[in-house]
Image 1 (cartoon, rainbow, N blue to C red):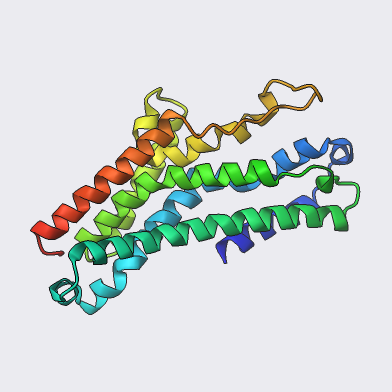
Image 2: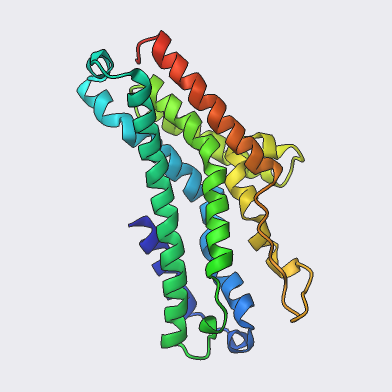
Length: 245
């Protein structure tokens, strides 16, 4: 629902945009202007908070029914229960971002049909968008592990959500103002989309258009994956050693 709603709102806004220069804008630059309207809020707020919400929702049923102790007393390895829930949240985030790719590409090309002067269909953005959204996915894994652990430890909604919200705002603030912001997981989604946000400033290629390179081997992605694995393992040992509140 969220991928369709956000991309549809941006598409409607782009359709009614009264800018005479759009018709003369090269297709790649059109895609950049269009996608930035989606990815800018995604990286700064929507994706981190979506991860926070998904991580809590996956464990909320057991909290509400007070069935954690019963679940962990079953003759099933705790690792299986813990990992199954984590990877269900993992899958939901991947599915959501995949839908964003689908709707962004589909509605972007649909704009070329209803406004033929907008030449979206003269450039295939599938490759660059797939890479950008996959990098966003990787950037969210550190947040997922942290929030998943918090949702296990706290029964109520406010603590993990409040911590996640404060950390997200902090991450946005330091992302462009601190050279070590890549060490803070909640800054990673914002840092992940810098390739597109800086697209207009990128060096032109042979065709005169900016060359957008999506680099997966960056410090922020490396830290995100390390944090994701470390917190995942730590969370499992916490589950083994203590009862969930």
